[in-house]
Image (cartoon, rainbow, N blue to C red; front, side, top):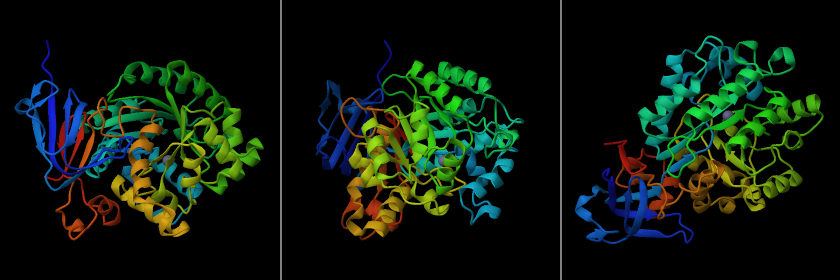
Length: 437
Ligand SMILES: [Zn+2]
């Protein structure tokens, strides 16, 4: 019989559970067996926890710390960490930014894809993120065809929970798309590799460290046939679907011109208006489209920094949530952020919505929900996003004695209102990763 792995975080100054009652516990503790939470509470952890003596647990002292459920990042392009702050597009909008960077990305090597992923993971974890996705849509002719495998290997090295999406681009300039020939693949190759990575990596079990999604890049880089075929393939395997949608007005014009449809109508035509879909950005929806997305249960990955950086616009987060769309937060790729600091993204989201709607236009509580439970909803997971019995033991530990929080009154609000400090540790599946020893 294999020995159980026992983990106990104790003495947390504040434990923010995000459970259905949204309990916030002073002096809290969390116990886990084999990476899954078995009990939590406040005060001193009991001598015996679910039949196991306390001294048998690996113990983590979280005195003076705020502990959150590990943050969930719902959209990224990890390879873009190799092209941050790219000079020629420092002040560009999306389409010019993309067409300038595609040829640069086409020259990336396997080693750079690996390094890019590792840098992204470590930066995310350092900010308190324990689960991330990656929208990998770029498969240059010169690079390995097995780039998803490379990012999964980097995730295992970093120790982060990972939802890679097998992205794709099939519609190059010669077919009326935006990307050059050097970075697109034919649809047969794409679908075969989707099947391959699902069979090799997808783990549907609770506590899974790797789950695959499928993710054609955008309406201006794939064909409608590939969108539809990808959706059918994903549903055959119970896999989630992801894409960029309604990021810019240029995209609206493109869809109108090429498909004679708005992006949401296009989405419906290709069988994507469903609750196994999450969309990056979702900025230019009208009222009717928000209602349709909400009734279908489509999720949205909100990327405030990227949207501000590229001047793309303003996602109607509250309206989408009210309509029934799960909304998560995301850093987006590091060529349009140019950072993978997810805690900083929470702050950006809070401040952005206040610019538009006033100080009551977005609350700390709403942002925390989006960064945890909302993110879990986007990824279709009910085993992460809160500190509850039966869920994975994924935690973000922030030390309130860091100088940036000095003098703060409300320790939870401080994480969003003060300038973000690195997490002291994250815990992924009951395993401690020291981030700022
Ligand atoms: Zn993106």
